[in-house]
Amino acid sequence: MIVYKIIVCLLVAFIAKQKDYNSVRFPIDAELNHSIIETEPVLIGKSTRLLISGDYLVFFRGKAENMNLCSFFDYPSLNYIGDYGNFGRGPNEFPYPDVQNAVATDSGFALFDMIKGFVFINVHNLINGCDFIYRQIRTPGELYMLNDAHIINDSVIIGMPYMGNAENMYVIYNTHRVNINYFGEYPDIFGNKSSNELWAAFWRHSTVKPDGTAIASFFDSQKLLRIYSSAGKLLKEVMMKPQRDYFSDKYRNREGLTHYYKVVNSTDKYLYALCYNAKLKNFLETHPVIEVWDWNGKPVARFRMGNSVLTFEVTPDDDKIFCIDNQTSNKIYVYNIGDILRQ
Image (cartoon, rainbow, N blue to C red; front, top):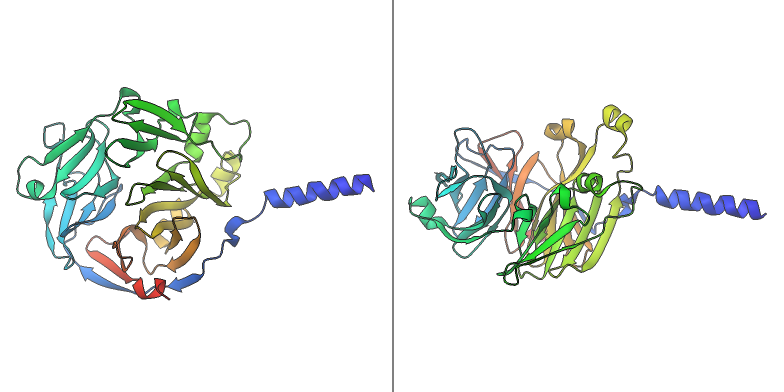
């Protein structure tokens, strides 16, 4: 009898460990229809971002041969204005910009550049060919390779430390106090793995709450959500589906890694996470979903998209989603979500 009980306990523990965490239920599950606005064929890039900033919708393409940093569209008409921003090491150029985390400011936008640190851009000056960097925050040498970098407020930057400083998942830099702290333990999924190995396994995409009080992370190769306070306190963790075979060469060669979250955005009320749940080779034929969560980590809605989304932006009033496609370079896809979320 004792042996039987031990076997039952071990079996229960094994089943719990292998649980499919996709049982998270979204109260709203809807397939969305979209309208299309055709524009110039400029919507191409590998590392991309779509951003509403004042009177503009800005498409950041990252580095691309013979192309500028970004394309501007009038908002809300979405008429194409032009391409701006040169790559280079000059005073008004971008050496290594991380466009995926560009954020809107009162005057335009801010983004992290590996060489220049955080740079704040005046959009009107950029368009008119004037000096456009009106503020710059340099980061210490150990943070020059900062990934997933976000500015929380006037004095706090949070990001993903470089592999060599990866004992913790996050680094926080206070620019006023000029001090650096690390926080965030790795989930207990993979035993006997070094912090450098875990660094890659828990690559992530984050977004900051507009009031600067919290930061949320969705992970690429583990279906996982974490929400932290701006001071680095873990407020919520939702583990949906760990990819336990992540380090298996046999699995990688036979199946290929599954990629979950690719782009995240947020408003005052909600988190929006683009989830592919697919192998990289299948991205072009996959129509992903956009998950909506609240800032307490509760699921709100699951939107099944009608196109192969590359990147997206949400209006601050949670009324519309604008999307750029993986395969087309001259269309902006518009989804109306306000009425659905207000149900």
